[in-house]
Amino acid sequence: MIVSTNTRFLALALSLVLTCLLGASIVSAQTVHRDFTPVDGLLRIGPEPERQIHLVDKGQTFILPQQPPVRGVIVFLDRMPLDPAPWLADSTSLEAMALENGLAVLRMTTGNPLDFFFSDSVVHDVASRIETVLASYHLGDIPLFHVGLSLAGTRSLKLTEYLVKHDDEFRLHTGAVAVVDAPLDMIRFWHAEQRAADIAYHPAAADEGRWVTYLLETNLGGTPESARERYIEYSPYTYGELGGGNARYLKDIPVRAYHEPDVNWWIDNRRKDYNSMNSIDLAALINDLKLMGNERAELITTHNQRSGYDDGSSPHTWSIVDQQELIRWFVEQLP
Image (cartoon, rainbow, N blue to C red):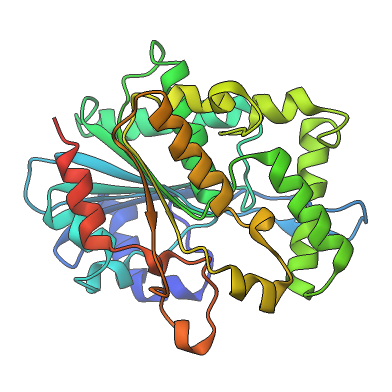
């Protein structure tokens, strides 16, 4: 079922109608397949009954290059359904450059806009859906390139590790994974978010601290002190574990971690320090992967490169990524 959830999709109304009728639409000379199903209900994100948010539509947008063959698929695990028209109209977007290089783009949602992938059943469902989409276009054997910013990056690593652990269940091959300023060590992350909630310096940071710690504690059975093993079992990376815990599943995977560690911005704007920055997880992950012999693990550190730097923008942003160079790196990983 194709569903448009907000006014941003009005520009695609005609193409969505055609999708319902024909199963595909053409946007910017590319083939776009959209399939979403409404998910009713609320997600509780705090102990107070009113702390709830709406679930979103579940499904995927699959964009294929105009000219075959498809050489690989970039996979995004989004919070909510997004309108593909702006990406395809912008020749400098990651999606447009991917298509020009023979890479398809698959953007998926689970229905949960704050999905941490706590449950293996959720990750299994995502993997099964990817397999089904690719099989329907006879693309089952081409490499996947997982990409994500922030919590979407956490999901990307969780999915990558799951596919390695269950490689006998799926015909899915990971070509590489790139994450941007993503939290990985949930023990460290819980302490950072609890501190943000306690000091309450910035309203947005304090609110995030409350819902993050609530979701971690609810889904992992307590705090890191009372449920340490569950945090280690869940985390894509754990600094306190030999080999980084689940990072061992990434030892043969090309991995990139992007960050812009502007600690002065965090101090001035959020009263956070290095311990509260995702940079600490990313650097430790890449270091441990190199210790395991993974020479295709890279930490990409930028300095004042983000969009809006002169106006005080946050370093927690996709704009630090050189998208053309990232596409080139993905292409280099093709067999």
